[in-house]
Picture 1 (cartoon, rainbow, N blue to C red):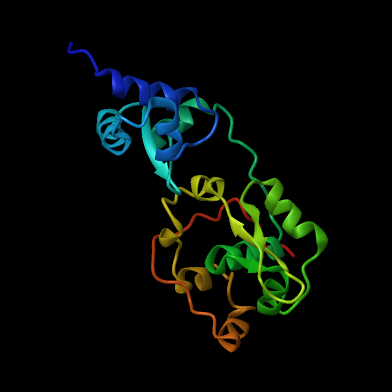
Picture 2: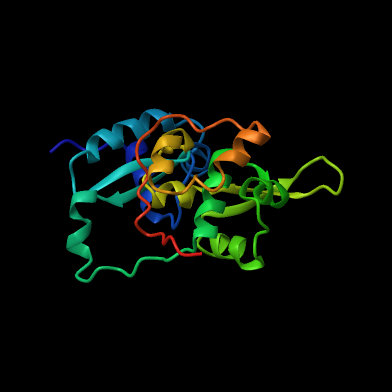
Length: 203
């Protein structure tokens, strides 16, 4: 069996040791600027393809994960789904498609005020984060999705979010469609379906 080059071993070890996904730049900080990290990641991704673990990129960050078809072997009992209110589901969808977005903009699109706990729940889940303040009167705080959000729903980037017809079919956009059109906010593009089985439809 041929020896794996040291630079590949270094990148591999860095990813295994990390408790969170790493960008190529962060990996380079560990392994040195002389290593072609992008090439090493591509080679490792090929090396692990079809194995029990695979190397994946989510939101420009890399990490190892269990192969999807083997995940059930490691979960003898089904994990309890995280339940979100319909308000939280709609808020998450608005943030995902229009980030960075302020609380007032979310409320304008939904047509109702957001309860204090709605954004807190999404941030506690690790799916939403503060994204800085907008240069506007009052400098309102904006919100955006996280790499954890992409990872949880199996998305490489926000470009993989489902299209507006998919969301309407799931009953998520009907209450806010008119407001979106009135505000002139573009509809999301077509894409793969987003699994929303962890979210409830209750208010």
